[in-house]
Image 1 (cartoon, rainbow, N blue to C red):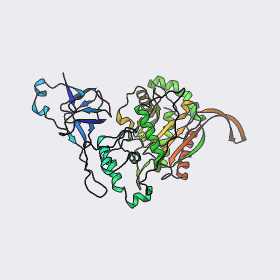
Image 2: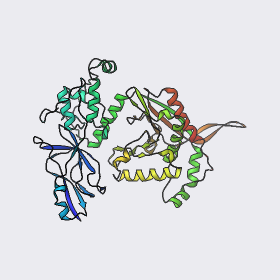
Image 3: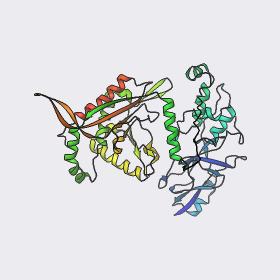
Image 4: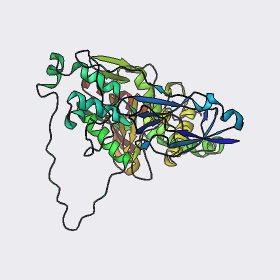
Length: 432
């Protein structure tokens, strides 16, 4: 075995450093020769760095967002190639591949960039690549305007394509109509925070800053509406209590309420597919696959949303096994990047913390998110053939926050009621 260094490549005579945008491979991943390992950025271009050899990524030396000097080793790849092969010119002269995406101004001319003229974003909690800052500087986009641009990259990062899309409509009548005359920027004066006296100043970690930006962005993008229903889930509670021991013995893991909730959500989405959509300008993107994100709390107190891909194709047992696996690896910080991407609908269980209901914020670019409250025993009125009676039942609240641009009250309310119906009608004699 031989170990080689993946080097931050030289990208021009005047370029002395580059920023790591995205690690496309993680430690332990097998890599083919010429397969992209990491995306880096300068103020001129975003660039994919390929592996010069076939092997295994055994060490990542820098984090996303770090700015590294040219010629510095950024990762270690273990390969079975001989020393002679590694010393060959073909390996030594391996080139990086710029992401070909020509910059265009709103008037159609090329965007010029400079290695020195970049926007100062030091006061922002948001990460911007050198290329994005250079484009902003060249186009006269101030920081407050840049902060309003919706990012479609990883962790809501603003990409070059986001900048190009923004520039195409900036200053046009369509832009003015949508955002108003002040270039769409709504300026906020943040309240003064008194920091003297008996206080502690705690710096947000990177994940908390990203979550904060994503939440503010979501409220800015989507007009949120929240609907509530109360569901009698006595049948499913009794069923779970009856089968949970045998399920553990048969499958080696517990069955929680989450897969039952998600199964009901999937069925309701199939009944109301326009909840499983995203908004792209004036068009609606309807997803045929149902990918359910489930918000999970990390030991640090931050949140992460692993995604159950193609949930419509999983049985209740399959959902339980997938959910347990994702939840366990989320707690151990062992999720792969693709496992927290691609969600089309999100569910968050506020009942875990003893809360009876919640008003969650939509996980962009989705248009709806459901919160499941705590299941509690309550007196409820039951209709029987002998008349109404009061009985002790297992009750819970469900709440749905939805984007009122495309999900109106009838659709959102009907969908939420349908989820509750599936839960209330759960077959207590079901086998699994």
